[in-house]
Image 1 (tube, helix red, strand yellow):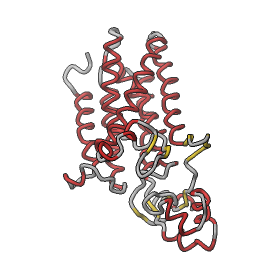
Image 2 (tube, one colour):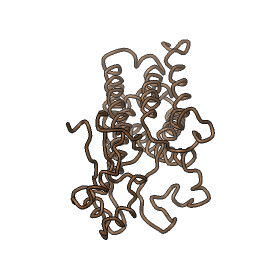
Image 3 (cartoon, one colour):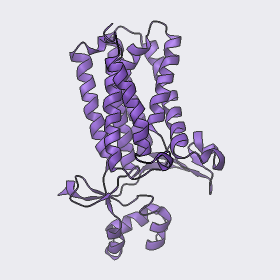
Image 4 (spheres, one colour):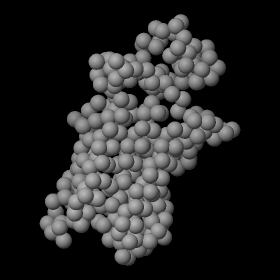
Length: 310
């Protein structure tokens, strides 16, 4: 019955060198870019584009996506950082309440998408023979699998967890390291352990802390729901690119990507815990849902716009 309720308690850090931590989350972001590069290489070779142009695209992509993802998170979800801890916005550190290395965390997919489109526009300004929609259609093929990797990273980090549920829900997960259900300081206090990892392991495995473990609720693994959805979108777009003529209809694959990805996001938001942001003032829908609606509308436009087959 593993898929009807299980404990999740991995150490998010793969290894540490001094104060620098190498986290699974960061590695999965790297994996997203590496896999994307290999997929785009195959596409560029198929369409007789030079590797010089691919290398340039890789640089534009990394800079725009990472910058946009971080700024998007701060603007939409954590705008107080502009006044309380501005250094943490673009650096992998936190200075409040004390200095610590955090890795690059707090990244928003909406911001990444907007910045990626801007980055691709700047890229096409450099390479005049590459048209914007041609590029966006092909970037769409690889972007979904990249989004899948990022959500898996969120799962390893026990972040963006879903609402409370019970063990009858599909893959209901007890996130022992959930920062709200069991903060690091609280875990160390109740167990008496001197390190965070030892404290969380004690809660999971030591019978004397069984009541504490039981007090941590099961939640929907919203990150995995999204990751599965994005993987399926990747398969769809990959097959459409290689097996059909849809790639010859400017904007169609990009539009389909936008509709599918943000529809998945809109649906999964129903299972997510509230994350704050504009939902606190607009109400009715979550911040993620409000931000997904214009993305879906943009996608529908590019799928069905006049003369899209030219």
